[in-house]
Length: 110
Image (cartoon, rainbow, N blue to C red; front, side, top):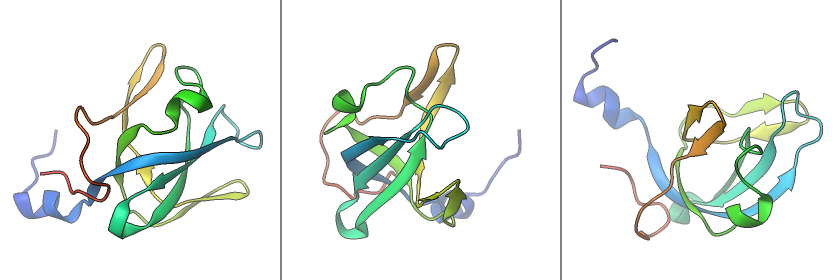
C-alpha cells in the first residue's frame, strides 16, 4: 500500500449526488446500467455501473451516492462515462457507496 499526502487526497473530488435516471446498457461487455446523477452545483453527470446483480433500476432512483467527478471522461462502447460511482466488490456483486443521512447534492466528502 502506497502512503499518500493530504494534498493528494484533496485532489480527489468526491461528492454526494442523487440518482435520477437509470437505463439498461445492453451494449456493455459485462452487465451494467447507465446511471444519471444530480451533483447539485456540479451538474448532472452520467456513468456506466456494473451493479445489476444487486440492484434493480427502480430501487436505485433517489439513492444518494458518492461519486468521483474529476476523472477524465471515459468511452465505454457507445456511452461516455463522466464520473466514477464508488462501491465495494463482493462475491455477490458491487455494493454502491451510499450516504447514511441526506446531505445537499454536491457536498464534498471530508
